Length: 106
Image 1 (cartoon, one colour):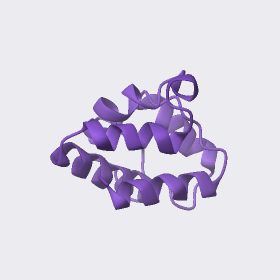
Image 2 (cartoon, helix red, strand yellow):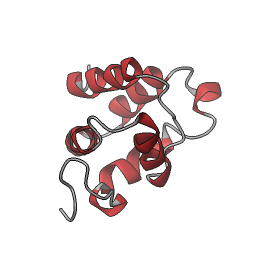
Image 3 (cartoon, one colour):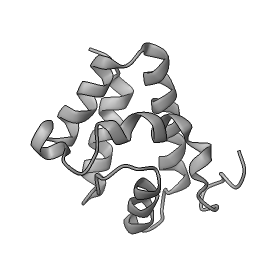
Image 4 (cartoon, one colour):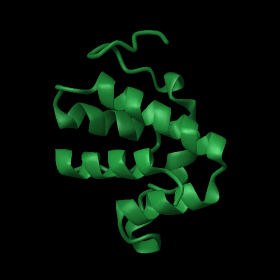
């Protein structure tokens, strides 16, 4: 993947599963339709195939590694470029999503 090392340039095309899947759940009105980020992502997990879930999980982990140690605003900008409206306000919120995706389908 081009420029994907930690701290490297962000290339949205390197994250096709995140671009295709999560914007449909973490859109600008997700709080009205799903409530919380956790509920929106749980809806994705329940509706997606095991393969889609695995791809999103792997890409999310790569994204988190790429932005580790960088200001949260850089990750927030990357999420926008992926079409994801959710803007995490804290590392705790990000870890919550990490845990949900790691856990996978219930």
